[in-house]
Length: 354
Image (cartoon, rainbow, N blue to C red):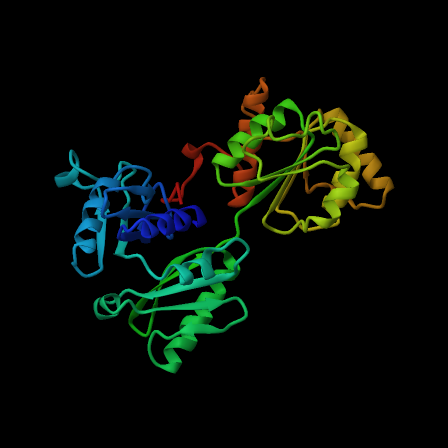
């Protein structure tokens, strides 16, 4: 989201007017979830996505009308027989998109800046949209602004705090009034231990998937920007010296790719004493069995050791470093959303890509 805000800032500073389109409701399957955004300038520039390409052209056209003076609007996009050969969502779902002139940039930054735990709350009833009725709720419970009376604000704050805790955006109905609660979620962080070939491929793929990647390796001849151009940071040092100060929280994923006890064991030990979302370590089943014994000797219970996903990655038959990186990233994404990584054809739920 910050990339979009930075672009919107540059466009407005260049004298362009900018509209913001935000998915506020998903019904059925859709490529993007609630909170997905795109911006459109009056010069015709577009950034971001609300549907992965299905309806962006129609959204951009609606945004131009808002920039020309039409009031903010909620447009519904989906697929039906009348739309089959026109615009629509090929996956069969419907989305509601709020299209408005760009809200105050300072407000957006306060919610979506890296590390922020806050939510931008927008009334979706007609009069409120026209009046740009918005408020910000921060994790501590304070509301900046107001969406109505004191009791309504209190109920919205409670709903926002619950969604901030869950890390998801959603439209809720409170006292017969709809409110879109847009949660600013901290960007997921991937720490890769070992500046090896697989690490280079995984860094590239994970960066494209939205992870902020850090490479940890004490060897400067391997751990440098030319090998890892997409890395957000490079930590040239031993894992036992670097990892303890990195704050391994629930937004952290750790991939240990060295296949070397000098790197693996200290990294896993530190990770198991913290709360990262994902811990994966490369190596065969035999290698991991020996690793488990060493961890047990350090006092770790079997339940704790079971948190380490090893051999790392999903079973897709990967052979090359690039294919292994795909398998690892797929397992990380499954962990992110609490899925097993099973084929989609085995899913029974209606919603798939949400």
